[in-house]
Amino acid sequence: MNKNKLSFFVFLFAMIIKASIVSSQSLQVVPKIGLGINGLDFSIEIPVAEKITIEPAIGFGPSYDFDNRPDAITSKMGWHWALLEPSVHASVYGKFFYNRDKRMSKGKSLLFNSGMFIGTKVKYVSKPLTSDEYHGQTNNLIVNLNWGGQRNLGKYWIYSYSLGLGYGYNLDYPRSVFYPAFDLKVAYVLPLFR
Image 1 (tube, one colour):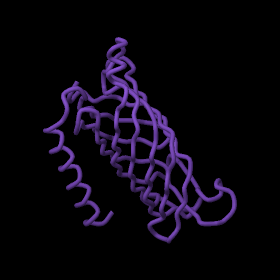
Image 2: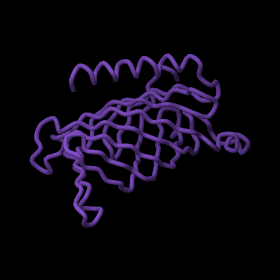
Image 3: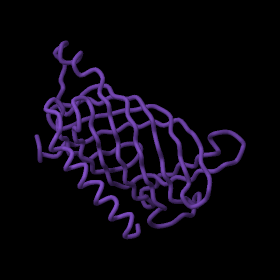
Image 4: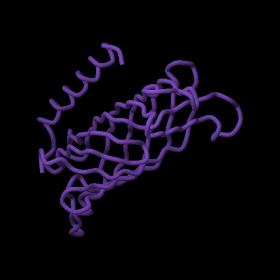
């Protein structure tokens, strides 16, 4: 990652943390380490309004390759995840929670921002750190619009899921594709703000 990109992400994290000062009291700041089908990451979910959070994240995960061939959608998106060939990713995930009042009236837990949400994620995915022998993966920008939910599992864990529409853009070659986007993740909530 060059210095301009690194400076941009440092600036973005600083602005998001500053925005947490004016955050809503009903949602919580939730720092976490997550593992799911899209990799391993460190993120911090920060309330910015009564029902909205922003979640910047950095981590390691699968490499991608998007192609513009006119055949089936499954051949347009190459998805590769190998333990010894991860890519670095950095993302920002905006979530609008729409059912927390209903959960509270039913006596359900609101711990760690439990609830249903509509979200948008913007994610940069680098080339593999070690090799590109499988697909010739490239630098990519991914934008997902999705519906999902998250729930606490006891006092220290969260699981989350989402399903929606994704758009992948290859930053090295002018190629892009729409694809079905999904995620399933379990995360450990760090004790910083518990």
